[in-house]
Length: 204
Image (cartoon, rainbow, N blue to C red):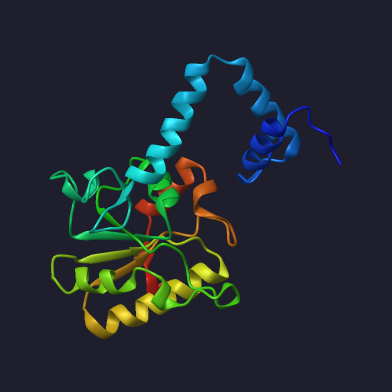
């Protein structure tokens, strides 16, 4: 067991190491870096983290992370409100936005159906998706979920539910994304082409 020279260092390392992808050694380097840096840098970091937790909101319309009750994408007059892209979480919104190939709006589910992890349809933002479709404004729904078993299960469930309520066109991003891959890790060119080359969901 590693012996630290200070309980404060040990406490800081313990908290930093809880972050994904960071082990004890990396946490130690980061803690020592913070000690060596200007005090203002650590204070600014602490303030940013506190603000992140206390001030961050979720868009009432699409559930994307936002500074306001309604996000900039949903408010933008430049976005095509008739095309709705369904994604798992905010990371996927960022990935698609970085392609500069999509000009519609989004709906963030907040996860995918995964019985193994105890995540069912009621745990996702599906009810608000259905309400958006019932307005009649949306003409196309793009299923942009990662091509994993859970992603495909969720797409199938949503497609069946949407068809029971609406005549909206349902498409899926082209399979330029590798099967079993995560959407957020796809390169921008591949992801952009998969959006542009989307196909009717029934044809997948």
